[in-house]
Image (cartoon, rainbow, N blue to C red; front, side):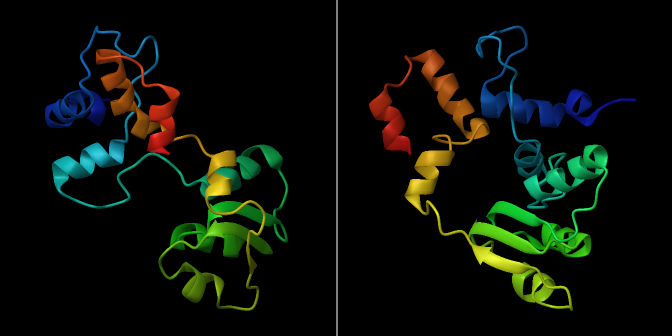
Length: 171
């Protein structure tokens, strides 16, 4: 069976153009080329569709991992997430019987008002009150997501590695 990423020439050209990736050139010093499939695909198709990705949201991944390895119900459990769940993850949390959802930032959309805020078994939504704002990001987040660092890594390989002051300026 042929795979889209290996056989679609337009897609491959977009990845090469975006990440200056060339087969046989080890500019990533042994690291795999990591890129966002959805971003490359949507650039080609001029489509903002979020479905064109193989990635799962963290909530979906957690639910599936529990089902796969946990072998137990999570009804009545707690969900800890950076942003309040999107509509798709909210539906899953509601159906699984999650009792309480802790989050740091509200996610835009109708998940809270239309999915989590209705029915008889509404989960309790709790805004996390520990380290918030920039303190949270300084403690728990990398300077930038790995996929967003790649262009910077490529530029650094061409020139010289950025210093600590450059890294802090990007944060």
